[in-house]
Length: 342
Image 1 (spheres, rainbow, N blue to C red):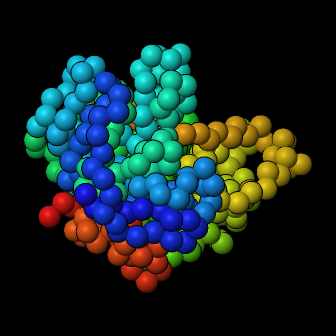
Image 2 (image 1 turned 90 degrees about the vertical axis):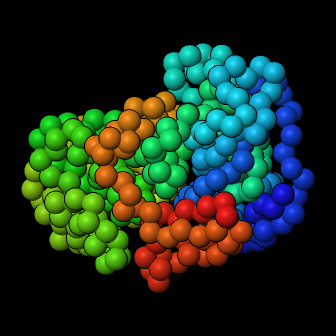
């Protein structure tokens, strides 16, 4: 098969590699019909995750068809259409029994495209397949379904839920990339008073307005106004930039919540000398994807308008082009780049 292989910081290539096979009885092999590039994939290619070894197939989000299932896979059969979760869950450890799949101690967690070969390929081996996939209804579009592999659960679980967004809240989202915009969309489920999105990119601010943000502005004045006024009830850091985290600490009100979604490739400063007076709660974490079935139904029946988050579609064999498009957002305006099997 063909796959995108990591060869060390800054180096990937679309190579011919052996097809995956069933290694454990709980595995399934899935034909990849759609996949997408995540910000963490860009971090890996830059070398920000040293645990990812050269020779690894990248990618951790996919939708496709089961082509083979191990003897201990009880809920899937060849031909089933599935969403492959970005997080693998053994289903047996204490963390999995509490639906904290991102912290799986039984060999799961975020391993696809990190510790084992991932989804930027024609085929992928999915460990713990019964617990690490969700059936895709036939009326759910591929481009919408692939957003449920990681993006939407991350926006909801790590951003909106951990941030305790509630009715009447002022929510500020720092970073209008895909996960920030998804957080702005999902936050609407909880009837906030205002959702404000800040970013330095004019194109991404326009995208924020299209998905329904009440305000979409550069950070200067809006953050200053929040810092001097009542402040935001919830500040969601979705940029992955240390300066973005600092902006959240300035914008949040006393007693408010900061929910960090962004993947930080370098240290962010935590100004405890000023934050301790504000009684601020800060949360962060690995997505669990336990919310995927619930979010799926909301997308399926039009309660989460997320199709606008997909800005580019390419063939699967244009994987290297997809990384370039997604990595040059200032020039391309890319949000989610989805690749389809041709």
